[in-house]
Amino acid sequence: MGKSLLAHALFHRFVSTSAIARNAPCPCGSGRRYKDCHGALTSVNTAPAPDAAALDQYAYGLFDRGDFAGAAHAYERLRAHRGLSAESLVRLGAALEKSGRLADAEARYREAAARAPDHAEIHSNIGSVCVLQQRFADADEPLMRAPKLDPRDAYSLAMLAHARQQCCAWDGIVRLFRVLRRMLETPSELRWPIVPFPLLAMPLSPRHLRAAAQAAARQAEDALPKLPDKVRVFVGAGLAAMMAVATAFFALARLGALP
Image 1: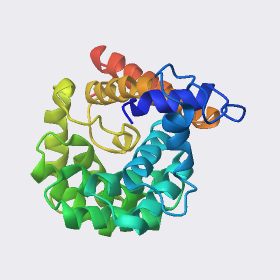
Image 2: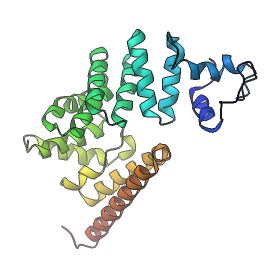
Image 3: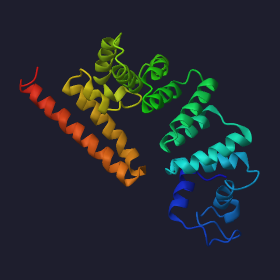
Image 4: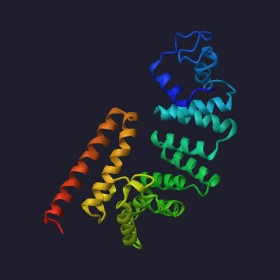
């Protein structure tokens, strides 16, 4: 197709295509006819026998602009048509997860793990979706494997500690807390920011809590614009509250008011 997927997503967000003639120049400025450019990408999702590469691009574009239910539908059509790579299975799993279909998301993540068994992020995703389903014991194995494959994966380590707290599995948890403290000393070196909220229930210093909240806030600057308004307000308020609590604890500790 030649056009970037991001450009395609933005094009369909801001340009109404209902009145564009198929043979008219595409409004994106490519110089091609609409039916051969963005019109082709839009039509593949409803074609009886879609072009696999075009449908893959269409699904990616939907995912990139935050239409997760639409992306999941397109990826499932592609999966039924020709199968999916491990990378596309992960995107399908993420779209299903963000659409609230947690069991289906886990199945796709596990299918991706079977194809790419040494991919740390896939195991992290499996563990995370198990936690979301409150199956904390099932989250243990994938969340242990992810940091072994990627030693900078503090996200999985924090989720592992959280899952073990939830099911009272205390064996080795002190070592997990120790490793987390060490990793939070240099948050800029972490591959994925730690989800900060579970850390409030862990024996971490105010300085470590503040470092985790700041790393999550930096990541949220890119993610928040794509979220629905209610979710954006909730996440922003939660991060602001944690930053305030962590900063207050940090100040009290510096003043000698906390041990």
